[in-house]
Length: 294
Image 1 (tube, rainbow, N blue to C red):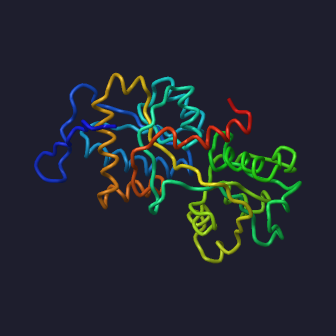
Image 2 (image 1 turned 180 degrees about the horizontal axis):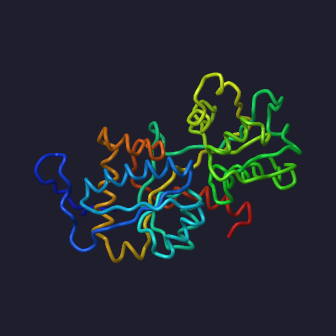
Image 3 (image 1 turned 90 degrees about the horizontal axis):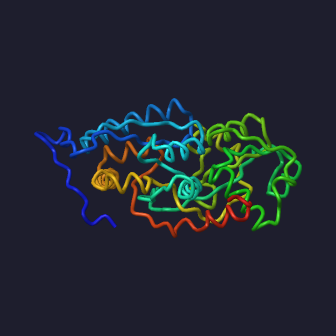
């Protein structure tokens, strides 16, 4: 797909910055608000510093207030590349002319799941026990925090979330969902999980002690979801193919470097990014249709 990837040129020692590419010298990369914005901004700055060193490009980051704002920023040309959750990619293809470049890999897997979690002491053991209860979603455009679990309830369990739950709220981020469940603000919450057994989910990242982890139970899990993505726009690619090729090469090589891998892991828990195919994201298009989302 990118057979003519440009070689990185280093000056002096291995720590020197790469030579800047001809033409465009600055890019903006959009970050999706999956977690606390202050932490994301700090990790985004470390990403920018590392990426600039490898490519010679000046890199700015844009932390979106929500998923829709990130898609709009792509449409308006305020960001050149973006880390997009799967459903946001599907929406951005339609609304912003997004062009899929890469997908994330974690622990050897290029898929993840959505799980609905509860606090262990609530006496809630299965999804059906949540009838009339309250749930926290992440955001109306969140893949694992809204779109997939809501669609899965409908297609797998024949349960309409709007009629099934007594109250629905949006927490705004995955860490906020976990905290809302732990604090008893809601009965349940929807978030990401890296396996179908619930052994490696968002709560394992945001809760710090074994005692806290024992208080969380997963009562529902979705089918596999293709991992989040890195995308640009068709318009930006047409004008700056060399910059796109250079960016793709640099991000792919981050997974081969201990320092680069650490930057990716701090940013979104990613081990590496690999080439992606738009057909991989058909399940998200089907989920959107199930919910009547155009």
